Length: 172
Image (cartoon, helix red, strand yellow):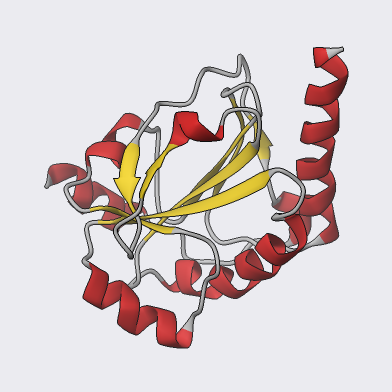
């Protein structure tokens, strides 16, 4: 509960332009694994997506920047889903009904996962909402974004596609 109150105080109040999209993570630590249900009850385990780039977004329905970025995140998903990129949006502490109502105004075609008790968010270094991490195909955390972003911006797409290309080059 203390963590929830802290996160409420740290919510980022704005929407970032494309130029400020992602911050590289030095030392690229391995992403903490999780196993969460989506709004339809299907379980998603991060380690099942090894070999793909995974964009993990921590959000809530009451967070204004979270609401603002969902449409651009959905457009990014439409462009990237056939390129071994996965988007998983992890909702913090809300139930399926709340997310269902939210989805009527802010549709998302990518999985919306439920972290009802906050166990997963506690394992990640989340400093405010929304916070998004980009996990490289090898399972390491490559980038982080705190606050809302324009996820379908060309700069973002270039970074994500470059991460995939760089992983393929290092595999050879």
